[in-house]
Amino acid sequence: MTKNELILQALCNSSLTDELRDSEIELLASCISLRDYRAGEAILKPGDTELKDSLLILGSGEVEATATAGGEQMTLHLLKPGDLAGIIGFVGGNVMQISATVVAKTDSKVLLLDRVRLESLLNSNPAIVYYVMRGIVRNVHGIVRRMNMQSVELSNYMFKQGGRY
Image 1 (spheres, rainbow, N blue to C red):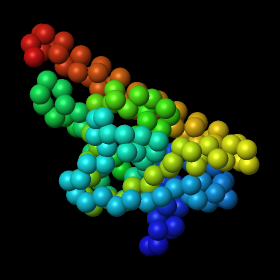
Image 2 (tube, rainbow, N blue to C red; image 1 turned 180 degrees about the horizontal axis):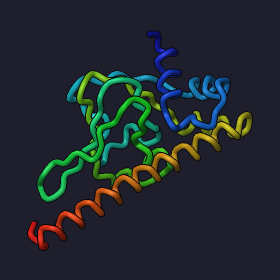
Image 3 (cartoon, helix red, strand yellow; image 1 turned 90 degrees about the vertical axis):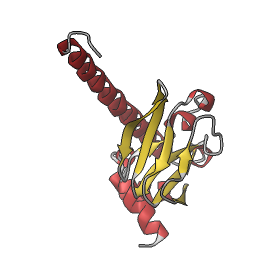
């Protein structure tokens, strides 16, 4: 599979492009670069500013988002092709407050959507930028819903245990 085919396939697998037409996805693909990561290699880590202006879209492989809590490493999410990472930095948040680490579990290919390149479409193709941002909001909403469900499950478990944990 060529680099361009991989980029187009990953974009089509992503909720980021749910509202885009094929021609718009191809234009969005022109704003994306591709980076290879080896198994075990950190893609994002707390305080890392190298990719702070890039939205990461998993093209292939397995990638895990983890965080350290109470001295223990815990898995937040196992990303599948099309999933997003690096959202906070991409939308202009303070990357110094990010606590998650994103690591390639297998050799992986990651698409990097540069914020400045996406913003360059504002004058010529504002609908693409609008629909991409809607896709990011839907993605974040899904993350929040999943975390809320996990919190409820944990609370129910603790309640059933009689408060023993």
